[in-house]
Length: 112
Image 1 (cartoon, helix red, strand yellow):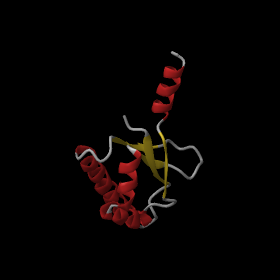
Image 2 (cartoon, helix red, strand yellow):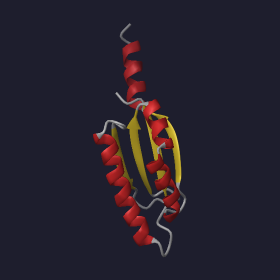
Image 3 (cartoon, rainbow, N blue to C red):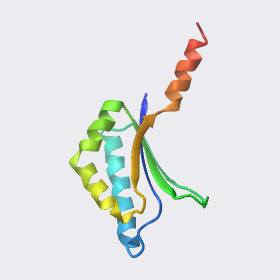
């Protein structure tokens, strides 16, 4: 079970670069699909948020093992995508924990 997540978010495409941003989005979906098929990540979820007044409107959530996600962030193809992410305003990424695993641990502790 995946215990970690990699969050990759952004606001909107850069004005005048909408086509490149859409092409990058498609490239990223294909890349993450291949990572999943190869077992390098457990899953990924692309999300587009409804209008809410904030500066985060789109993101990917990748789930996987800590070591594999760390390796991914050093992968040449991933680094190239990060460099191309200049087509997305407010690009950001961060790591975290899957609460499903935390909740599973909590329920097991209650069984003692």
